Image (cartoon, rainbow, N blue to C red; front, side):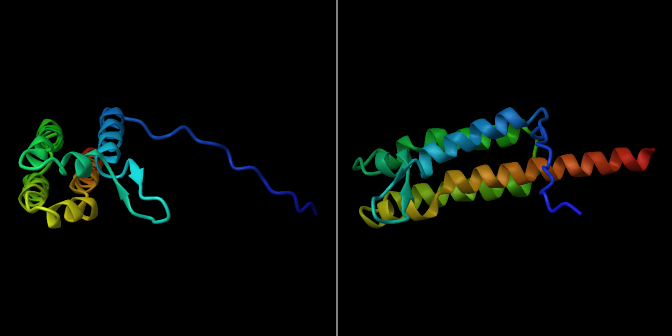
Length: 139
């Protein structure tokens, strides 16, 4: 009896009409929230945190890419509760982010873009699962 390891075939990654969009949003969220690391720590931050350091307008400038996540959620026709959660994340990030120093620390910790990318991906996959199960029940 041979004790050789059997190789597991490498499967093609699952791709559908949303895959490219979700990958793009994931990259954007990473760019905005966790692109850089503070040396000697595990603390990650991105351009959202850096731009937020600009007094007075930094956090308002970062609203544009955050609103893009909401646009994509509307475009994907995800459920209203997901859109509301995403909007609350944006509002919290903006409101607290405008507070000097505390807001900058909060921006690095809260990571609203990564949260919203995850919420959107989960909502799309849930929507797809529901569509698949309703198609299966028709058979």
